[in-house]
Image 1 (cartoon, protein in one colour):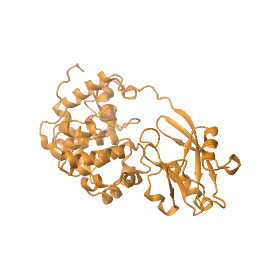
Image 2 (cartoon, helix red, strand yellow; image 1 turned 45 degrees about the vertical axis):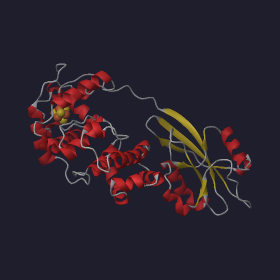
Image 3 (cartoon, helix red, strand yellow; image 1 turned 180 degrees about the vertical axis):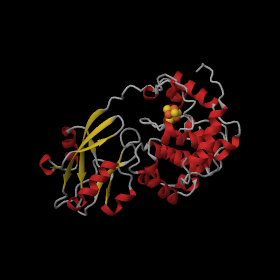
Image 4 (tube, helix red, strand yellow; image 1 turned 135 degrees about the vertical axis):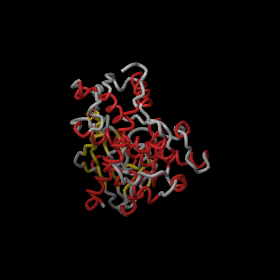
Length: 356
Ligand code: SF4
């Protein structure tokens, strides 16, 4: 492949035809309504289609349009997002909805460039919205598309490298269909081909519409492309939870700072050493012997492996003073209204009968 990517009209023609016949149809976000497309694109970042299919209808039922989302309480949004992970996506969703309402009079902008001014919307997401909803001749370039391009054209470079990524953008742009009306099927085709045929391992080349033009296949280099990124170091992190309940059976939660693990979510007081835990407990009038140590819980994030040890404390005769850490006592019936980290949510559910 030359530095300057040459147009290859055959690729777009085949992909559009293939998508219409064999691609994925009937997904709830396959519409021309930018609010619904944007929502799905944000949810689908780092999340499987099957999981999004579970969350998406509830989200849309609660926030049917951008106005409803902009006017929502952040905690309600985080509550519905609970379990999807990468919570900054939910917070950006809220900010972007407010931007659409205040900066664009409640209507999504049509151009990729303007869409990119919305919080949490990068070039690829903006291109998908512009192409699906407004037939804009803009290309996406997510991990799946990078893989297809690297194989199809034997582009051998480090996909984490900025210069190589720029080359991929140029290549992807050169492949766009000439007819703007083909854009929705083309972009969906790119997504479908990467997700269902040109998969990371065991691509199904026999049903691939590009199999006779694929250079990696011809050169027997599929397994080595795209070149693997250097493995990310996963760090272990130990955390200690102070799980307090008061005389009414409510649990003490506080809202975590926006930055860091579980940013903006409601959590029990959480520290990273036993000494800090005892110090924290003392602020609630509790001594070490008042605390009951529970079984360790492990939870894997992308770059971290968390190990949490819950320490519970009963209120006894007197209600525990909650003045030391700003937070709220939340009754078990109200927990669903709070955005709570997935492992804490699972833990509270599991111990509900014994704890409350
Ligand atoms: S022929 Fe195989 S490796 Fe090449 S693009 Fe198609 S699925 Fe991917």
